[in-house]
Length: 55
Image (cartoon, one colour):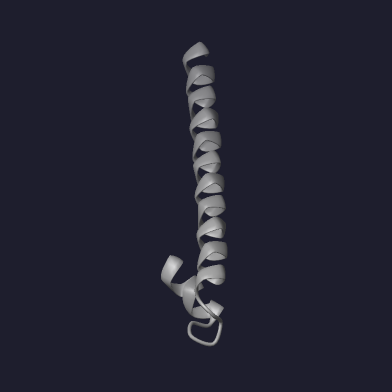
């Protein structure tokens, strides 16, 4: 029974760790998008094109 609980805890911590990584990645992607928005005029490079490149 204890082994099962240990496994459950490991799975839960792995899932939350992955969620945290996804959160950090999306924050970085937002920062990059904001920087690109400021650097490149919208007429030259429409924002929907940038989103495709980042994804």
